[in-house]
Length: 338
Image (cartoon, rainbow, N blue to C red):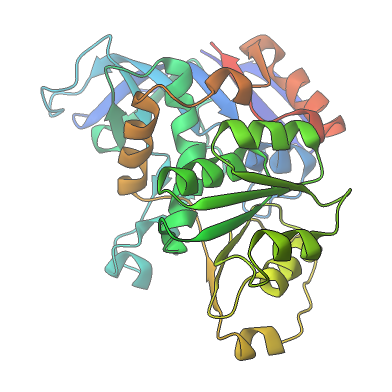
């Protein structure tokens, strides 16, 4: 089978690999659509500390069942379209003991710690599959990145009477915006790109701030009657947005971090104490998040075509990744069709 491999930072190749075999509890999938994400870009750039090379990327998947093991439940059938839960958990660590499998100490994600789905075929345990009779393969490949935002909104305990400020309107931030808006919250989208802010409105933001053109503090104060947002969710990964989330959130507010800051972040600790803030990390997603996003997309209201910036065949996936590296601001989501 054909597969895309990131051989080392900045270098990809299309290679032949053996088609995977399946056990009694496994399903062989024909991969149809793969979303490239920021993690894949970090791997290409050589700044993902979790990756060893060479690596097949890809964990945002829309697939068709090709073959089924003997012990797979009857609700799965050949020719059925499915999406994949790409995380593994050990079941033993303190996170797993609390049923927070998303942040398992030994987590291995497809395309990160182990080879992913940017290949013609993939074998997975049947327990990792989700089905929908309503979603297209393209929509199925959008589920996983949207779940990351949904999980962050759950971590922030977002409710209908909250004002939520979302820092960053890339692929992950879009999921945050959609999740918060679906709960009835008053959502403020913050970015430096007007096109991304336009997209933010389409997915549910009531207000937008271009922080490169307007004073962020004054804008947020004006939108919140001088209080600041109840919840600030950071989906950028820069020291300045890490600090801004803490500085701008209201008294007794909640801050949720999804992005990884590539540099150390310095804070004035008085904000944590005087405002008695809840500061939370958010990683990956849980099964409930997958089910919630599937139900959300099945309503048909999400602007799928606006979120996907580019669609390429497998043969062009490496070049698309390199082009994204050169101009990251031009991309929300790249889909590779096999």
